[in-house]
Amino acid sequence: QVQLVQSGGGLVQAGGSLRLACAASGRTFSNGAMAWFRQAPGKERAIVAAISWIRGTTYYADSVKGRFTISRDNAKNTMYLQMNTLKPEDTAVYYCAAVRSIYYSSSPADYDYWGQGTQVTVSS
Image (cartoon, rainbow, N blue to C red):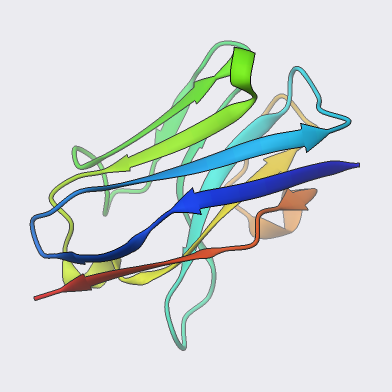
């Protein structure tokens, strides 16, 4: 079993920055892809960014391109999401997720493991 533990998040003013972290423990896998999703009140969970574990190939939703950066530290089994130039519309609960496949997916249903979620609130 894999456990994903998130840290980071909080309240920030528009234009500010936050960094989220997602540490994997337990029976970790060496070649699975990981991703960040977010869910705002009344909306479906949507992908923010994803990264393949082997090559580090990344994907970003159009709404965060140029502002967010996904990265990973293989030695620490930790994934990060650096969020810059935050906007009020970025306000949501953010979740990290992992899949056993080497390929990432934009569908939440394809992911096998989830973090506990962390609130990010951007004030205007």
